[in-house]
Length: 130
Image 1 (cartoon, helix red, strand yellow):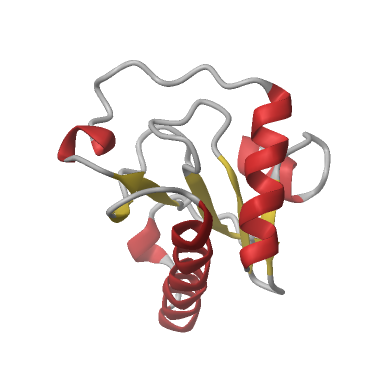
Image 2: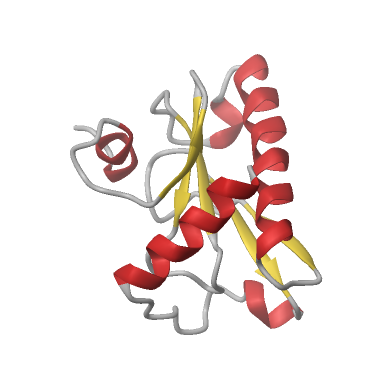
């Protein structure tokens, strides 16, 4: 059964797309820890990030760096935090989170509720900086 991320990549579930390549896909988290929180996933459905083929893992990381640099250009933050947890969705993914304090990457705190309009605005800004 396809994961929610595979359904997003296939266009079956809408998303706020940031960027994509032949093998990688980046979109806004709709329940972010901070405004500008992006998920970066391989298009290939693999549960555990360290089960990815070396070439794809390297490509995913380089793609994540490009996305992070675009986020930094438009979201006020000290830096972009990176988290790989891999328990919520059985599809490898990297969280890119704008940080101003260590608490901004605390996954136990409540997620933000952001309007669809605000998510669209943020995704357009990041996409424009990419």
